[in-house]
Image 1: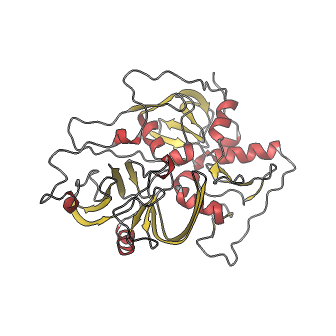
Image 2: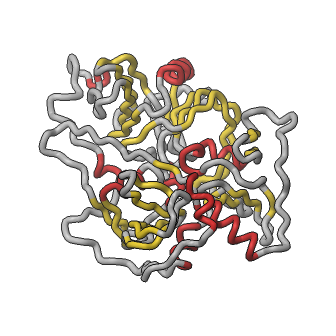
Image 3: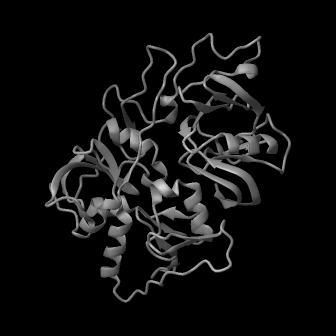
Length: 382
């Protein structure tokens, strides 16, 4: 079934975010990462370019809820709707643009804002507000849209790839008609329901239903694995990882072929930093305690996407509220708000201690913060 996306997208889709795929550099010549995976929780596959982009944007997109399909989609530069490949996810949608050979996220925040204004014409949207005397780590005004990002929503934006995934705010935060604090962004709508952490609204689910996209589960195809990020970790060659009989001296070696990269082992609670293939730093760390799935530091290939010199971290994990003030040298690297950061509250490095982040000694954290740029690969191995 073909359907035309709403006309409002014509005026705003120039803001779609192009997300780079993850670069895989394997160790063994006969090893390759899967090109297609099947998500057991929703019963759908993700493959090819969509798989690469989705792995880097799961914090926004969530799980796949449809297969790839063709729809008439109209972008700002189009004279008329064009048939393109689209796939829906819980929190958004991906579209393949053959003319650019690129996969882009749909800026569904614009679509949601316009739809909601039409649906609730009496709802009042607050005017742009200045930050006044609020400190920079609590409030920021975006010149492109004029709206501000503050406090809880800012913390979520900072921790979840805001510039690339969520986009700029297109409204001020306000209380919605159902009493829930809400804020609109280019690519998402964030909600803060009482007693729950801030989370994106399921815009992909909403649009898929409106477009009458088939959402029924499909059987797991033969030879297609169930998705897990461990599938994308190259096996180490047997002669790597030992120097003078101690793997902590050199570690597994650089795994991604980048100029600079970080490798962290959960099993040995150790981090290695490599530059041009040479070890420049090694240290004991503390990864997630793993009492519940939410506190496990995830295996996989990631990259630093957000850096903050100082941040107060607050949230709810597995029903437990936490608040840690003035966390220094914070570098977020995955799609679940896990970060490398300094830890001043313990000196038990070499033992799991965190809710999923990678705790570093303070001097090491400060050094790595200056050393590692945005985009530096971070690989978590067992």
